[in-house]
Length: 316
Image 1 (cartoon, helix red, strand yellow):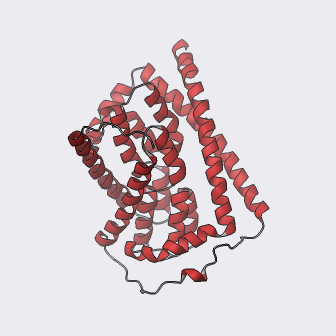
Image 2 (cartoon, rainbow, N blue to C red):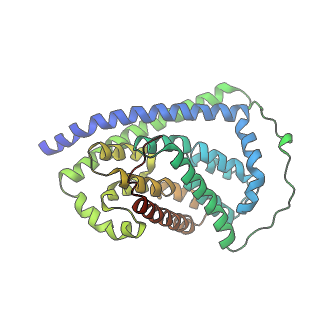
């Protein structure tokens, strides 16, 4: 019990600090997105990029789902998907693109906190997302044909107020409160588990078990625990564990850059992946295409670092 109390004493301060930091980011970003939705600007942004979506085998309507997911989260993308008629193929492609690049503002802030530059994170995730859409449209059978004509952006008003603000604000506030409670509990539990795994010597066995898979991905063995965390619960909730590992010197800057390259594009492969599968997407394609992409990217990064002798980037 004394060892377990020690684990809790060490985990609690880091957890509280991270919870407060994440809460501030989440509250600010989600409120800004609430304003963009209320004023109709988000719909205008989606209309502006909709003509491009035909190259991904997607109709223009899918642009709002992607833009919502890109700036807000997977849940907002799912909400839009439920209102439009998409085929299994289209949901699979859209889901893969969104899983590779969602909650961009919040998750970029998290990766910057762990030492990965903002420009690098946004660039690598966005390019990977768009590249996956192009590749899947070319490779998957049943490629659709679209008419060349698209709706003119001038037909979509830049400002289009969406009814009363107060009901939307209350929905946002309740959602933020629920998220805060869930986030607090999860981050506390995760930090205790993390410390306990090291305290009782379990982490070494876990690392050895997953070592062959991480070797294929090009990831160092020291990133095993954080890779598991990111895949099970995602970047937002796993950020406390990632930052704790960094501060304790358990993982090098070079390794965290490789890990962030991988998990930025492929994380939360339980809940988020299953949400798109529940909407009709093919989960194995959504997973395997992203795993193939991150394997290429991480091994390319390893070669780059090896031949240029640049083992770390400074956060920018």
